[in-house]
Image (cartoon, rainbow, N blue to C red):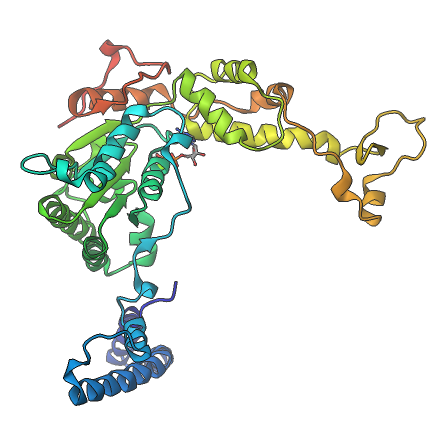
Length: 422
Ligand SMILES: Nc1ncnc2c1ncn2[C@@H]1O[C@H](COP(=O)(O)OP(=O)(O)OP(=O)(O)O)[C@@H](O)[C@H]1O
Ligand SMILES: [Mg+2]
């Protein structure tokens, strides 16, 4: 994405301020270096500014001559639109590939709430009259890798909503120094392009409790802006749904927490969900994994998160091709080449020979089977620990609702729970 002109112009302030500073200190060499840097940045904007100036001047002349022309879609109007900063170039919309919530394992209650929040109010508009209002802000909280980000992206893709995303990495890297303005612009654009979903990932790192001594000023301003904007969306008429995700909901600022009218616990997947996740992750890869094998894998991975399972499957998928790609020799059976263990067999070829003879595509791709999973099982362990789960369950009991099918993952004993400050 090209950086918008306004941002590039704004960026020149950095070398300019440094140059002025250097001059004040009598450091001419330093000032020269920074002025040149600023001029170079300016020169990149001048051409674009000239183009804008010319085009807008011509547009003024045309409108003055013929005030009834309106905004008919002439080439010139299109050119004007494409040069303004509200062009897709500077848009905050994130492009998503197709998605369907059914492809996610488990989380049936959460899927239902998200469909209610996103799809019902659009499809069954006339049901949402009087005091029946759609959910405006949903907080997804749960252990790492349980599918929170995936859920948000998938519901946006399924509902075909515009998807806007705010994450701490955007604030630090992309929006440095002008974050509140970007937050404001993003909410504004989401309203204009409604129906939209605004997804605030890892909201805990943006919205910890306010007023703490070590709180930085920029972070305080972002939080305040988010509060204002969230309030605006909750009271607004446009169909904008705010989704946020966190692993540490108990670290959230109270006022932010209150803005969410639904707080859903996304637990570790239960047995049935793990089976589904294995199935989805193996997907179309040639395999010999049936219902029995899936059951075995699900039973064997209690306490694994969705992402733990996805790494496990990835490793097993690799494992299934390792013997073939490390084989010393191959023989042809039918149309395909398969690894050959027997040293006495004639008409063998090595991998190098197959490469040289351009027959690599004729090597048989092995099917993944349960044995491949067993071979790599030792390397995979659940990444979520009990102490983290305890805190999440405690928060759920106080402030949240749980996905209806309870997880069979290890649950902390009630007596052991730590206190969470409200
Ligand atoms: N329910 C699920 N169904 C299918 N795949 C899943 C599921 N949950 C997790 N996964 C897999 O795990 C990966 C990581 O999930 P995701 O990033 O959504 O987790 P998260 O809850 O947002 O984690 P974090 O809290 O660390 O950000 C996904 O890309 C997907 O491959
Ligand atoms: Mg995530």
